[in-house]
Image (cartoon, rainbow, N blue to C red; front, side, top):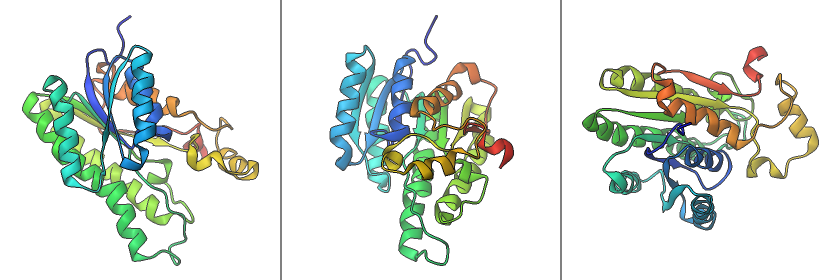
Length: 252
């Protein structure tokens, strides 16, 4: 059986750890060449991931990218194009999740979170869509969150950015479907990551109890959904927001 993404080339932002790492692994397992991008501070993890993928028979490389920099986004596009002259897919995953009530939030946190979580997606979409339109097609997945369709107490700024990502996704899908470009979003909930690694059992229980499947998800489970949406198997799917949430949104 042919792998879902055999011969495809693309990139994943924020891919050295957590959900991004799981996505990159699955895409490589499905036959893609993956440009793993992340901050310079994550270079050790990013390079190690690329080496692991190559040792397992896959194809990958690491590139230092700050998604708040248009120059870095442009370099990511150029590096990906240099592999085969195409960009078949893009996954915009990089993000942060500050915790504070709206009353206790400040302008600095608003600006930083919007720059990393939202404006970076806009920057990436703008640059990637130009390439994909010129080559006649492609597929993009933006990583939002269940907080993109629900309120999230003590994380209002984060929730606002994730809502906005869904709006960008729908608009990009509507504007580019006529040239064989699909744009979708994935909405994770409680997924194993470094952010949750030090959390108490009580906290883990609080975030998984509202789910139908009462456990933490694996990053690779998000990766499987992303791989499907990027693949030709999803050729008639665009503009959707797919929950990967253990059934959280079924009742919340």
